[in-house]
Image (tube, rainbow, N blue to C red; front, side):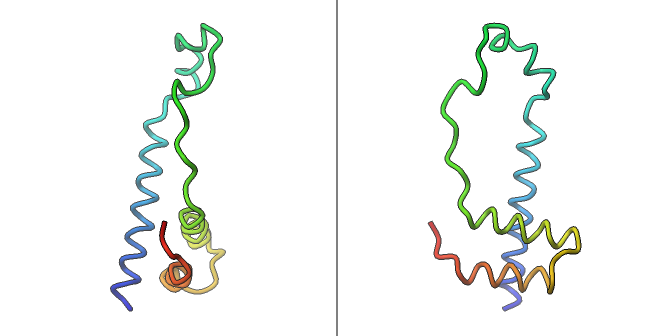
Length: 90
């Protein structure tokens, strides 16, 4: 059971780190305003948007966020484990 909890915590941390990396790589608002696309009156990304993340990922983010703010009743491992028990994969 400990191995499963550690794996779930590791996955949750990897998702958080990846999300932070994407946010850090995004251009700032000032950079977007001065881009050639904004000068031409175009808005948004040049291609199609990616699919939304599965509900499981959103739940993991909520659980970890609740843990970090102290709003989580119980342990992080137990909460992630409970959520993973209902996950069937995609």
